[in-house]
Every structure is written in C-alpha cells, then in structure tokens.
Image (spheres, rainbow, N blue to C red):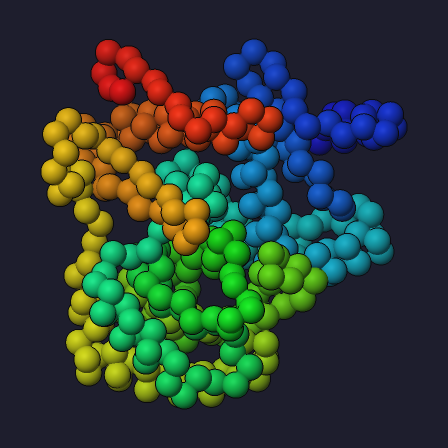
Length: 319
C-alpha cells in the first residue's frame, strides 16, 4: 500500500493524476475519489475504461453504506482511519459486486434487464402498486430473479441504472433479506450521494421481492401494511404465479439459423435483452470467452475518443 500511495503522490506533486500503468499482460488502473484511492490489477483483457468503471461501482457501493458526506467527515477528523471498521458486515456486497462484473452485462451496458412477462401482467402489477401508496415513499419496485418486473416512481425522479444495480446487488448479495421484512438506510449515490433514504425489503417468494424506497425513516409499519394488501391483490389476480414461471429465452426460440447468441440494448428505455446461454456456452471456459468478447467489442464500439457505429469481427469459429 505504501508503494501505491507513493506512486499516486508522485503524480499529484506534479499537478497530474495517474490513471493506469501497463506492465506486460497486467494493467494497473487507478481511480481517485477523495478521500479514497482505488487500484485494480488485472490481466483479463478488459480495457482501462471498463476497469475504471468497475472501480467507480465499488466506490458507489461504499457510498451506499456511508454517504459521501459521512465519508469525507471521517477522514477530515482522522486521516489514517481504518475504513474496515465501518464496513464490517458489508464486505459480502463488495464481493458480490466484484463477481457480477465477470458475468452480468448490466454493468458494461449501464442498463437494466427486465423479466420477460406479458405486458398485461406488468401493467396489472403496476396498477396494484399505485393503490393506497404510502406517503413519503419515492419508489415501489418489484424484482424477480435479479431482474426488474416493474417500477413505480415520481414523474420528475427517475432512478439511475447504477443505483438500481446497487440495489439489486444488495438483494442478491445476502440471504439476510429472505428471512423477514427489512428496513435499512440506503444511500443511492446518483440520486443523492450526501444523504440516506430508507429501503423496505420483503420477499414474497423465494426469488421475488417488493422494495419501497422512502424519505421517512418512520414509514416501516405503514409500508408493511400496504405490502400485505398488495400481496393479497397480486395473489388474488394470479399474478405472482405468472412471475414465478417466467424465465429467459434461448436463442433457438428466435428461429434464426446459425445464431449462437445475441444482445440488444434500447438507449431510450435504458434496458437490454439477451438470450440465455445454451449448448457449449454453458461450459465455464466458453462462457467467459464469450463474455470477454462482448466486452472487447463494446469497448471498440463505444471508445471515448473514437467510437464506432459498426464493428465486424470474424474467425474460424464465429462472426
């Protein structure tokens, strides 16, 4: 750590900021977010920008627990403070997030993957969420299998995809929320990095949860009563069973000969869809190779200094 600090300080003394070091197959990528410094060492082939984006997500994960205001205040009072003392118990979310970078396209695309359900089912669930909405609740969200089912929000307060990624990571990163209703402070950095909101989390099925984000820390019991009524209506209209039985789709369902896999993102909706892996791509080695290939192509297409509209790549196996 002393060497890393010395390298960063050397550049700062020259009024410069170090961003990366390339040494053979290894990349050292730096992200400076005062008062914290992040460093990633990688030989996966990911670009500097992609690795830096991942470090930015890890920073946001820390802010979701502490807020930027609290973090700054701590280090103003004690420059050598050991942050692990405040992050105790939350390492599971950092570990979960780090693992997702290698198998979840959401972070690379900065987009959401929604659960594929019939439009009428989604509309009915959205309609139920609006009934008797609790005062001071900002967002009501239904999540299933790590994918968005529906989201109810104020007209002028959209949720940034990265904030939703942090929320989904919190749901998937720990089984604690599965056992009982939970009420936890949560900072959504893109919404407001300086303060906490409060998240009500309740699993209504093994893989399906209702999440409510509120500005009022005393809203728990009101939201809990509202949730009970919502679940009754969802079950009465047989909507929960519709959600539970839904899954992804295979490329064979598309009916295009020789198509192995595909991905599509809607910039307007900030959502993406992709076929499930099948055949040889269920093998871990092939799965990783395909994921890295998507990362490489995405970086070439969306390079910050020379973006492309079309990129074509061919070898003896695929196009």
